[in-house]
Length: 344
Image (cartoon, rainbow, N blue to C red; front, side, top):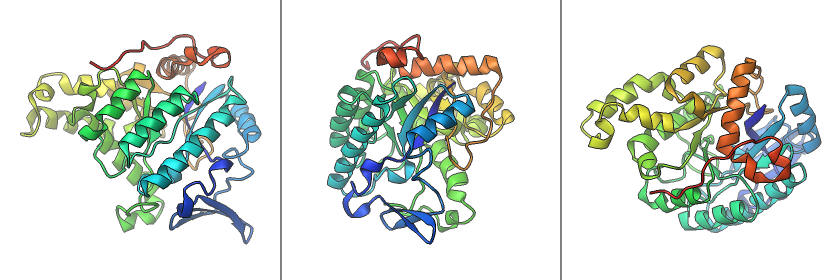
């Protein structure tokens, strides 16, 4: 199986964001991880698959995962700090990620962190991370001070399309390096359960309603966790596109919303079989890929799939990730590549 949803914590990035960290230490027998004014307690990074590649590879073998795409830790997007610190962090992160996956090209690939608070700097780093470091594409949060359909981002989306790279969106908990969305989310881990789904659903709606997919017809955008609640909200989202006064003519035409929804890609880390079946009935089944949140609190949910579905998701991942062009190591995993085209 090819797993596209697996976060890594990189030793080389500790302290790379200046006063914002990240910082990792042990206190009273417990590891602590600081990002800005937020400290995560009780999650063991050092010595675990997050930071030890040999532990990761053994765990992948045990889980039947042949190839894994490593992505930035959502706690360290640093989308709300000063641009200079964010640029420095992202450069260090992407160099470290490239170095890690280069040691195991037949098992691992990597995704890039971008300083989204500065779109011009993000474009420079995207070109460097993909063109020089060999990372597959950007992996960014859903909240960085601009709407995802902001016209300022169009040059960045166009560049990603020109690089023939997929774009990944995955939320981060609020209140780390930026404002807290809702104090109630700090109870019962509701930021991980509800806030992520909220952010992903807004991302889906914004990318469609805001015309991003229309303006960038060849850009592959992946939204984590099946797009949050988008599949469940699909009838209302579709109805709004056809009936609400803000909906433009190109979106309110019969079948338009459905077509744009099926343009999006989703990982299928959604929790159980009924949720997956609902997603398969509304998204394009050819745009679904396997994901695990490997090693995370919910990573044991629905890892095992039917063989036919596993094969289908693998074929999709090969196309999405353009694995054939990755060279000899990744070529043993991928068998086909998507056509590279510049946006119209």
